[in-house]
Image: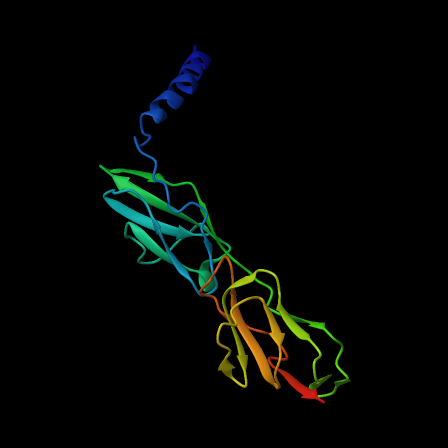
Length: 195
């Protein structure tokens, strides 16, 4: 007789606990955002009575609003969840991964005629052609400069050098057009043409 009561409780308890489930499940948007360098985004959930946000499973102190601002530098690679309470029932959302774009620094490839001297400055004969080609992926906000001054109209990934000077470039990757970066290491190319 004792075994029959245990069996009855084992069959009844799961159905009773099913009634304790909330009638809602909070979700987070955007789902799995990828942030540009130094960028932020706002995670949000639906309207409920109360909230608590979690980062990597730990409650974030003071994060009790409907939204949460995340930063690429501090939060990329972490998962976020939110518990929401409505009419005395609290339910946890599925986790959302906040990720961040990582880019190789831009670089430049030299092309065209070979220089006659490769000392501290590249020397070319008059009439030689030199091209500077920006690394693939850097397609936005390209600014080539000569002696620190922007070259009018020089906004393409390839620059044909026709005059002496100190050349440099800044640009941003297509995915993050506001993440403008300069060339790592040697930032300028000194070009001198000789007759």
